[in-house]
Each structure stands twice: as structure tokens, then as C-alpha cells.
Image (cartoon, rainbow, N blue to C red; front, top):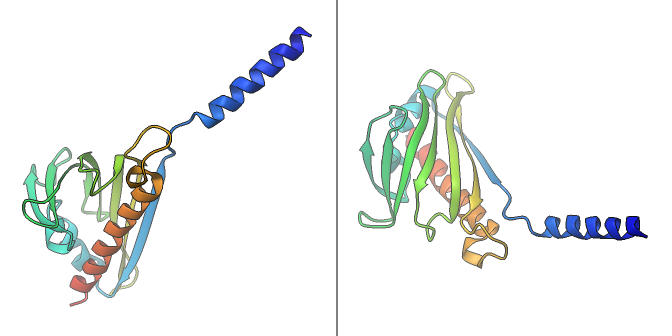
Length: 177
């Protein structure tokens, strides 16, 4: 009898833990082929703060520290006094044409994410073509169960995918000119 009660208690506890978990880590990867040499594409994005020159949603970028690991960039979204996002460079390698960064401060109305880190990589396909991959991992902005719609997993995925799509499409347009 005691064994049955103990088994019932353990099963009940285990099932409640399954339903009590918080958000799951989300991932986004987007890649675009560009009809331009990798070196030309890298030259457009290599500077950590150049994002304001190739991403249409970024109105301004204020750099702090250049391309050194630990450098920061403060982005203004949509307009010069728009919402602010602060990002920190974690790795920068011109040899492999890659950098990694993380968001350290964001406006959740613009990017409803937390613990966001991303890679941006340019790869040579042929002498005259390349690809750019932008990938990230993050959690939704609302860490508890039952998030409001604007802070749930779907909102986070939608926002990140939109940022990547806009940026990569415009980068392709600029590089192919």
C-alpha cells in the first residue's frame, strides 16, 4: 500500500514538473545567396557598427570600441531617436568573415527576446558568389508561463525573422550593385 501511495505521489510530482517549465530556447537561421564575391559582402558588414548602412530598420549606430571583442554598439530603430538596442561583440574574425554578438539591452516592443546571441557569417560559394548566414538563439522576453501575445515565443520568432529577412535582402541588393 505504501509503495502505491509513493508511486502515485512521484508520478503526480513528475507530471506537475513537466507542465511547470518555462520558455524553451528558440533558434532562427536565415541564409541568402548573393551574386557578389565574399570579400565585397564582408566589406559591407565587417565593421560592427556598419549595420546602420546596410539594414533598413537601423536608423543610427553609435560605436564604442570598434571591432574589438567587448565592443558595443547602440542601435536606434526606425528613426534617430527611436527605440534603443545595445549589443556587445563577442567574436570578430576577418579571416573567416564572421562575427558573434549578443544583445545586452533591448526594447521588448521591438525585439521581444532575452538571452539573445547571434552569428553573422559570409561564405565564398564561387569566385563571384557568396552566401550570408545570420543565426541566433534566444528566449522570449516573458520568462514565466502564459506570456502575453506580444512577448510569447511566436512574437519573438516573428520579430527576429523579420529583422533577418529585411537585413539580408537589403544587403543582397547593396552588394549586387
